[in-house]
Length: 437
Image 1 (spheres, rainbow, N blue to C red):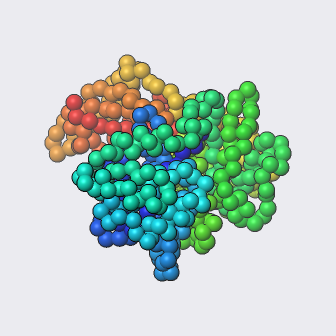
Image 2 (cartoon, rainbow, N blue to C red):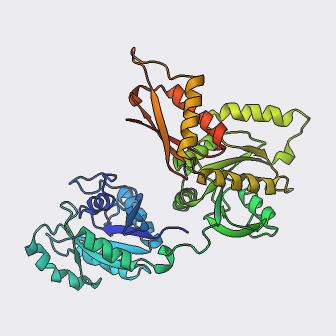
Image 3 (cartoon, one colour):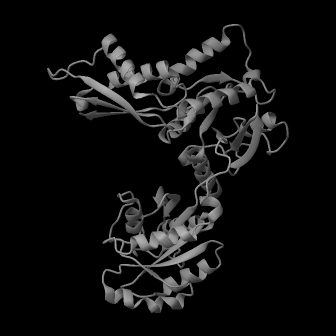
């Protein structure tokens, strides 16, 4: 289930980014006294009282601005308003309501989403007592807060969580549903893949690149298990994203990757691996999602007995950073090996959920160190003492050492590769952390 979205909206320099950082308890958004520092939307997952939601920081709104650059900021903020489940409309308690605040309030009244009026910079009780003048905006009673000092932030978060749509914060009844995102460059066959798999023309398919404009969920049953297949818009290079529609669909595709359990990355067999394919794989890896690489349009390749092996060697050489991902050759047109792709994706997801017992992990560590000891650095002898798994999805392992900062990158790769081989982490991004005992 996708997380509810909370957008922070307001005119420039009212403290939106400061509140964004305060909610997250870390500095992500740039904060400066100069208006307009935030240009694009910042996204981050926030939680309060066990409830998770996606927080969006936006650039300052100026409804009368004609400057092209500031119009872009306005468009970004407007998009955030339209996709949000809840809006935090921020005003400045020190200055009182301005004409721009009034204009923004009028536009927010037309929005479908619920709105909470937030009066920032309430650094003392006097300011808090004078908030009644903001009632004239017609948004409701203002909630006082000081993003800089952290005053009343807990009260605001309590109200925020109460206002979130209940259907989005309740746990999914089908916890065993596996979400699979089908991603790739434009016109690589993503919609055709899903249509053939489910046996109906559910999604529009044309030879024109970019037909799919949004991330489309398709429920799917296979061998007694429930899945959601997510068809996504083709990801282009950033400088080729010419219009607003393409820009917004690329964001939704990114969101689909963030919310999936496994990403099936389609590659065009005719064109081979491109730079854009590598960027898409890097994006999946950055989001720490499990991955399967499917080479589509295999039916269009003239083959002999060695073709697949030769192609595999070529691809694996180009995809050196993604060598852990299983590779399969398919045809969305004929249906060749499509069911096998789903089986592999299921196995990969199950691998990402597994937890390795500490006793097994330390037996493994003892064995890999015996076969290849970490090389000494600066004349210092490095010891790996013990290890434990702290998380799954993605699997995260902590290794304790006498000199963790001196462990060579090549040795870390060695341990990572051995972990994959020993505990079947094919297709799964794994994280290794090294700490001092």
